[in-house]
Structures are given as structure tokens and as C-alpha cells.
Image (cartoon, rainbow, N blue to C red; front, side):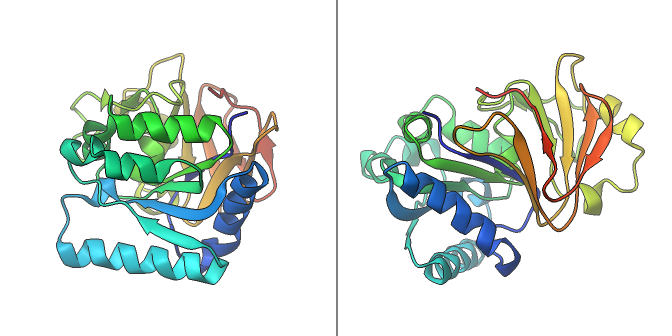
Length: 241
């Protein structure tokens, strides 16, 4: 049975997301997984050591607040993603969390590696998998280039091939008409485009058929389904693996 799957607009490890992240851990633990909060900081792998240490401390503080073990996996290169020591640490973790940064780097490092295979296998056997910002974008078949909108998308991890996510939607895309976003992001006609606001997530729990919105702001359906805005507690049916 697949575990819970969450797409987060922003806010990994922050107090506003504590209860949500706790619920994802609980989902995994109910499925027999160990009380372990796995941090996967790969998307930030090109940032400074100080910045990486900041993310490590923040995640550890969140895990401590929830009352579970935190494991920080320093997966920054493809070589790291083939390291069996790191691969072995994925197995049986209740929550695997891919945090923010550069989604293109995240995909390049993880695609077709033992580390990504271990993540998928652990999720398929009941663990929760969450992606925040870059971590949410990378789960699609393709990743748009927000900074170079004329450049074509790059290959993603393809766990959710029919869904494309715009994270931080209320912060970075409020200046652009939603109709223009559909064109500029090169979204195919057979794909669903959603914008997820900051401190907000959309999650499909294990055993459920619908996705649910959780958080302070909104999820915007921009293409592929009737245009709509969803709030905390609303649900929607989206394609799932």
C-alpha cells in the first residue's frame, strides 16, 4: 500500500507546519514504519555549508518538537546517491522529506539512482513522502524553468507525471495572470497545473482517494481541471501513481 504523499508550497520544518508534519509521521508509523524523520536536503546541495547547517538544525528542531528521531542525509551529488550507507538509512523511515532549493539539481542528483529507488520502495510500503517547493516540483515528469521561462522544462522524477506544481504561488506568482502562467510554464494539454501557496500543502493520505488541502492559504487549480481555489479542508481528485 502506498503511503501518504504531500506537495508543500513552502515552510518545511517551521512551527506553522509542525502539526502537519507530525500527521505525516503518524501516517507512516501506522503502517509499521519507524519513528524517524528523514531530511533529504539535496535541492540545497549547491548552497553554502552555513545554509546547509541551518536546514539541518531546523529539521532536527522540528523532529525534536514532534518527539521522533531526525536523520539528515547529506545527498548533494550523484555519487552520494549511490552511497549504500545513505541508501540503507532510507528503509523503514516513517517520513521522507525533500526540502527546497534547486529542483533541477535535485532531479539530476536522484534520477535513476539507488537512493531514489529506496525512497520509492519505502513509500510504496507505507512511508510518507513529502516534497516542499523544489521537492514538490521534482515529482512531476518535467520541471519548468522559473528563472528562464523561455527555456524548456527539464526531466523530473516522474512519480506524478500528470501534475505540475508551482510552489510559493501567493508570493512569487501573484504578479502574473493565471492564464499567462499556463503558457509560460510550457504545460502540456494533458497535464494538471496547480499553484500551492506558502505554508500550505495538498496531501493524499494512504488509503484515501482524494487529496486534501492543509494550511493557512490556498491551492490554485490552473489547468487540466476546472479553474478553482481550494482552502484548508477542501478536497479534490487528482491522478496518483
